[in-house]
Length: 335
Image (cartoon, rainbow, N blue to C red; front, side, top):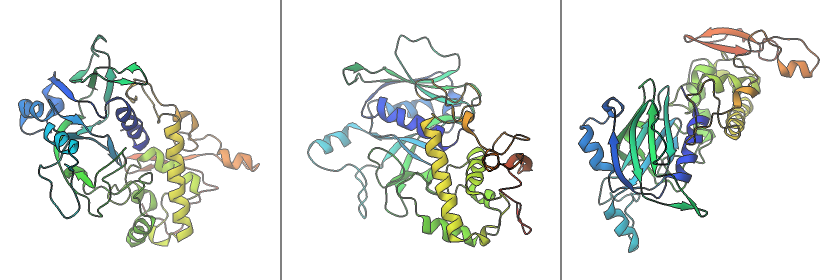
């Protein structure tokens, strides 16, 4: 599954190429890719045609495009706010186009003359636009080989803390219903370390299992959990209630650093399915320090002149990679 950096790479591409443009037409080539839109193809199309993509927003691995309908734009033109204001419901229920990438979903911006991809499922034709005198591609295409992902239009609800729903260009204090239970991620400006640390200490579990709990901290999957724990010199079985504040701070900083470096590389791509909106794969896999390096030297120990090999353990039907020297397993470890 794509992790936070992969989804953020896609979000940034959508913010650049799609934000502010109107959806002129919608073509659904495979109804399985909108199966989460319970009211069917015509309602899906009716919610999108004529709407403007107001932003591209992400919380954890959840990605959505807030939609502004013509009435919203008219209100904005005369200085009224069509968005949700704290304490006052909007005149119209805010909605968004939710994108679930699944295992192989891709959102690609393409010229209309570009041949259709083999696994093209949904095509959105966008209004014409230019960027720095460059004409922008006319189509946003959802391509999905394995059909585990999909698109659907959903309602938005106010955020519990009154802050923006996620990371975006100008996000409103609303979040899709499906993402309301998801915690903020380390790259979100509204992320609260104090809230994270308080809830972390109240758990009775291992630290990696806690990192994978999207209701505690979002966006961290198996790969980046291993990389962050390696960087923080913590074993995945360390009990959460024993984590001291400096250790938790070091861990969150490591999570943030690992994700920022992955973003700079375009994400982690192990096959051609994980791409940005222009079809380019990420290369952070070449910079991994722990994940997938079983029986290879620990790079940190090697710098210290020590010999230690990365170990692989089975963890929650997946794998965990650690250095037995600089990430020693605690005696009272928990899974």
